[in-house]
Image 1 (cartoon, rainbow, N blue to C red):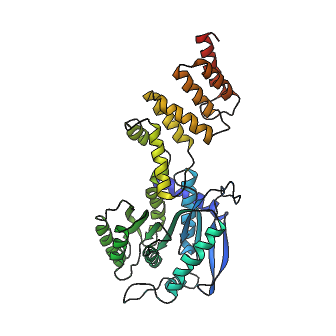
Image 2 (image 1 turned 120 degrees about the horizontal axis):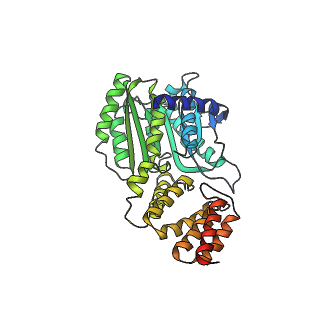
Image 3 (image 1 turned 45 degrees about the vertical axis):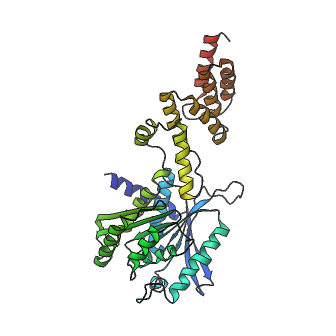
Length: 387
């Protein structure tokens, strides 16, 4: 039932996403020909340099059929704050079967040959720099491929400073010795890398055999910089598997990004004993920034989770922190002043608390913090202290 609901939502978002995409003919000097690109620019993206925030970049190969699946998943997950909104750029490769020349490799050494070298340079030296010059791009960049293009995306790892730090390899048709090269590069990674590998029960036999062997090897690849994920979809085949894998990959890669859940609240926050509970929130957001290279705006859901926890723990230090944080993050709302007033009240400074509640009353309501609640708090203080 849950899978059916998710599928229905993704279908809905795919229709909406199509209305927000555009197609561009890109004249490539590296390839010496024009290529068709597909763009998805999120609604919240602004070209105003003072207000724009960096967005992750997803490059999608085989965009003729993969692009819409990636975009609909990006829209769905970012709508529910389970991942950041992202710029998605797809490269069409199937109108004249360009994918085979784009991703060709030598049978002798398994490395790109002929036009595939130019296609590699087109992406790394031409397209990505062009997009970075046109849009505010975050440090986090991901590339997606399927079959032979899923093999090709691995070549971007084989450099000192890789262009991409996220890879979605969907049933890769691997070149000679590719399994060992993937292992060596991921095991030896010196910067954050996210690698998602997927196959299916009814995948192409040779693909499935080599992918399963690679996963068995990867289980021993311990590296603090490596975030490795693997799925084997029981009901899918080579062609249907991407529709299962793309949202599952986002589930895995962006798990820490999603708002605090009830489970996380009960198991991690209420039991947090390393210091004031606000430090859990700081650690979560610092980890997100460290992993993805951009700062996530503080979510109202997460603020409220920490507030609920500090009330249970009688954690006055965390209340002071939230008062300062929310005045910065939600400056036009009552929240910051309300938390500060409550802090003064708990600290035993009723006059300061009363004046601060009065300031909060003049601002915008947010969540449970209403003008009626502020009046209740002020009336209680006046009754208790005779103001």
